[in-house]
Image 1 (spheres, rainbow over the protein chains, first blue to last red):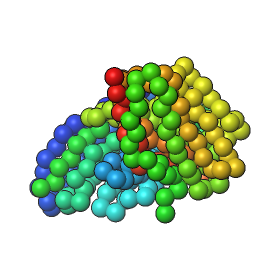
Image 2 (cartoon, helix red, strand yellow):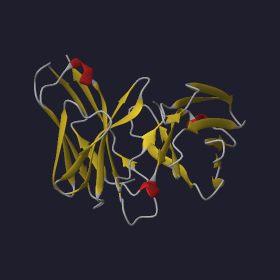
Image 3 (cartoon, chains in turn orange, brown):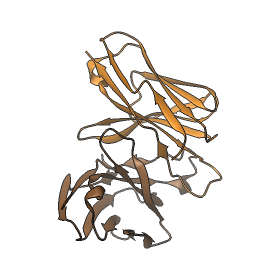
Image 4 (cartoon, helix red, strand yellow):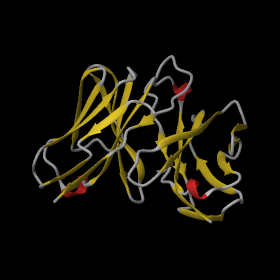
Length: 115
Length: 116
């Protein structure tokens, strides 16, 4: 299994509070991604990073920000959580350019509940 | 507009029989396709992939077929086992686009139940 951990694994918070989710990898992969999974929607990309301090928006980026200060860590922040952000969040990594494939490897997920 | 579609939300198959999961796509720029398996409370795990220059890729009990003209791919599992019960996601990327972002577009998933 790819060395990807996510923390926390579960979190319950209240509307309006800030929340930060952490993704940590030990594979030294260049690309890191944040997805959310909701019933009826599959996996939707929130933000991704293609290097330290290099990030870009995905399909559902509103209300989220990210930071990547080190190769191994990718943080997802909800500045002011809303109930619509209740979801399961997955981090993924891939080698990206120069590799033979775009295969992404996923972390175990974080279940976030916003009350 | 969904670029990757898995039109069957669920599928039930008897143990030992073949499971066929289908996926359709609309973006002709997609040139690499993947299948992921997901168990409850776990992250998706990579299963098998295929490049657009091939029409078939096999790995043990799992075979993926690609029909570019129909923009259709399928995953065959033979024989199906109870441990194969999971949600299967189809995904696609457009490496040739030059965007460099290596993004994957996922379908909504098909829940496979293999009945003992």
